[in-house]
Amino acid sequence: MVLLMKRLISILITMIQILAMSNGKEKGKFVQNADVSVIVNPCVEYQTVSGFGASACWWAQEIGATENAGEVARLLFSRDGLGLNIYRYNVGGGEKENPDSRIRGNRATESFYYFNEATGAYEYDFTRDAAAQHMLDLALSYGCVDTVVLFANSPHYSMTATGQATGGTEEYFSNLPAENYQAYADYFITIAKYFIDKGVPVKYISPINEPQWSWGGGWVGQEGCHYETDEIVALMKVFAAAIKASGLDVKLMAPESGAIGDETTQWFDLLTADPDIAGVLGSLAYHSYWSDGRITRSRWI
Image (cartoon, rainbow, N blue to C red; front, top):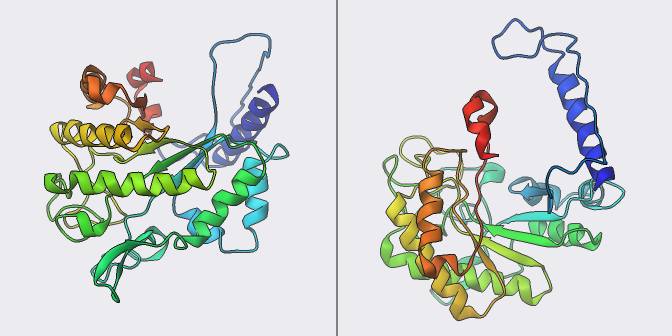
């Protein structure tokens, strides 16, 4: 752990030094020649950190198909590199094959769930998303990764109200109809079972990502889905029941909030108060964008 911390601090110092090269003329920029000192005392224990990880969203679909994939995996997930032990795999909403998609490039994902024109039905093909799967396999091969999180920015586009995985027709409108909650849970459990059966250490499934953002409307940049608080609780209850019925040894990751604070504490209170959800709830998650700009939010860390 001490060695890993030293490596992470070394990377952080390098990043700070790069930022310090700014001319300092714009508000919020680091001043030139910033003097930074970091002192680490390995004899003092402040907290227990169970892991460090990386989110393999978008980049893995590209890097996994290149000759650099092995080297990237070594630098991130081997003991010779950072030795990261958590891998966050993106269960894509299928915008890459959606004929009505409004996004292109690496943010348009390939899904395991696809429309088979020969049968006229949606089916699973786990040879798909091959580059991202290859990246995961390479990461696992180094023996450091002990926790995999399966997460989705949006349900599959075929389950949404708009027929797209990029949000509702209006901002702050949930794109997943309540009648499709069970289909979404079954879809996620099927994918989780596939990975678990092949030996991947899936510990968490995370079906809701940054639900407070508007997602959709006139601006579309990636897959995403907005949920109101009552919709979060209702969907999580369906997922909790699906996990229990499946018999899989996985836990539910609470909505990955897009910010520290905001509605996050309300969601956590409601989810932990529900005995059905709390029974399979394994992680309370939030992202920390812009948290350094408001000191009062640091209490959540």
